Image (tube, rainbow, N blue to C red; front, side, top):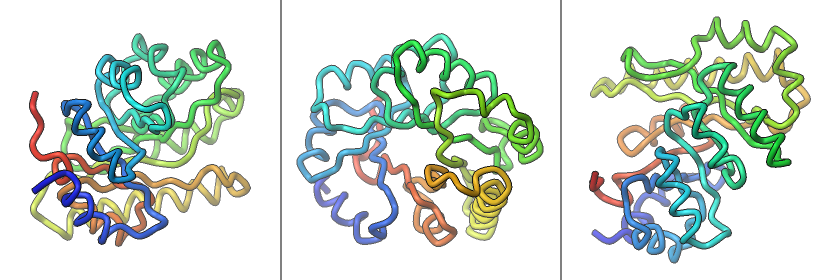
Length: 222
């Protein structure tokens, strides 16, 4: 199957109001160009160096999303051009992004990552930690970051019930935070959940943004 036919196949399951992030990490520029020629403009990367290299070489109307675990010492490289950082998993990281964004004279869009999976390996805030941060006033002083919503990864499991329940948890938390902390913020609107194996379930449960890699580009070349 070609990238073009993969995209056409996936697109029929994605409603118009859900954003497709083509996860292009570990795939060459040619693969991104092929998806770009099909009209795709949103690409997700998880390695700072790789994303910066692709940004330099590829069309400038691409919207780059950073979807990996971001280390503080790498932030300054992506802040000048990144469209959305999906995985902000600590208040410290949010503060660092704000600091570099201020230097770059930009406001950087961020999603707060919530740990919804059973697996220990996944990063993210717990619900309690998130409410604790948002109940304080410190985050309101960060004028160069925009909190646009939440991101989560479900457990890698064959249990549809478990995955669905985890997505439901994230959607419910989003609704609670929206009501309690962002009632008048139009920008707080994104729920980034769902990948190649589970994006249809995620859309059912209220995802506004799905991150799909292998179903578009095939298996990664590491």
